[in-house]
Length: 109
Image (cartoon, rainbow, N blue to C red; front, side, top):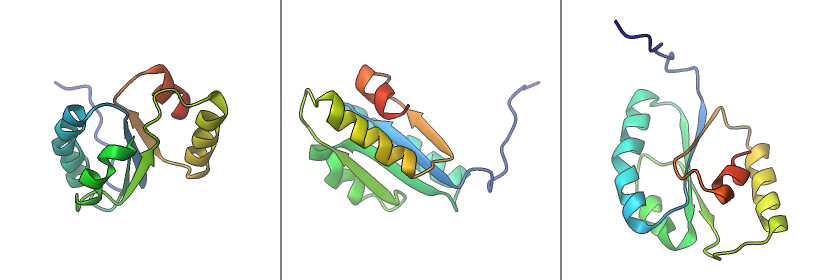
């Protein structure tokens, strides 16, 4: 018996998946995004990835919006804070941080 509760399809309307990693990790993310789209077909699906990979996701029909994060390896704290505020203004119902780095954790705060 599974303790997992199924959320109704309408429960989450705006989703962000954050993958601040290399090309290979992002390619592996594509099937997961497809499953998210199948689970919540009416949801607005956003993806935040490094800018040099953005074109891959802009060609992905099941992604509604791509957030191209600057490739700078060491963005300053102020820039990261501006990005975090911009994401908070979007009022996502769910944010999935697949990277778990310090930077992605700050951005998803």
